[in-house]
Length: 342
Image 1 (cartoon, one colour):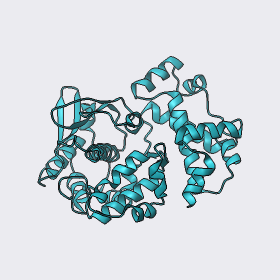
Image 2 (cartoon, rainbow, N blue to C red):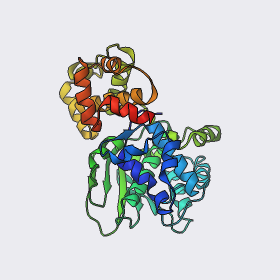
Image 3 (cartoon, helix red, strand yellow):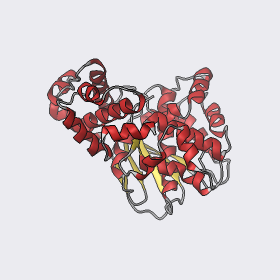
Image 4 (tube, one colour):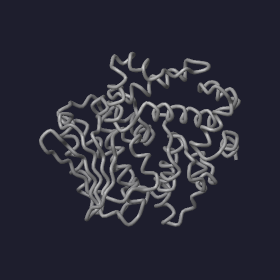
């Protein structure tokens, strides 16, 4: 599973439906290994593994695959049956259309649509959910899981051109670009709508997965769908993979500079910058993300001394690591580790 981390804003949103039902959020957080005090820190983050455990705990507690965030519950097993109904289709477009029709059978479910316009295709969620942040979060989850599932089905990551939410931007709007690896915009609309735009040629791609593979995915859900599999089909994925390998192999790590990285990818530095910008990211942002996520994983899952962790991540001195970590999370590495142990 991906090591990319999740903001505390999304953790709070995931708990919104359970709280509305009067459920105590503390046991749910504890089952995921998330310290409840972390919810009060605006810059706090959790690992993708912790977030997947939280989602599973909330789904079980609410008996609702939509975690109590929709207008009506989605009974456990609904998503699995949609997958079984779609996996045998001749191409991705047919599979997505079948998924849209499947959820359309349930009153009160998400209003999904697959729209084609020439060379463009868009998968959209259309619901009047503007009055609460949890509604936007549910639409965000639907888009993320659709994108992960569709990419998994054809064995290649589908590059998104852009994602748009017809609602005001949340305080953590900057997190959405890295989440979808493309430009993300927010804006007013008469009704709420969230859509992911991509090249329509992907709709002709044939599925590569069979029922045994689907059963394995469902056994590991939601982890395999909340996390992300790197297929290496975008420039950002190739850069991230290079950084991750450098962190794993180097002690201390030496992350390649932009010029050397461009040479490895057989492009000019200017072309590398442009392609990353088109995917909604940058060299510096990716470098920061990979370091941040490796730091959080190291503090959450191990006993590695902080001084050694800083050196392993390529920081020239312990103080530089502390400054970067405080910028990422609003706290120190030691305080973060103690919070995980409490």
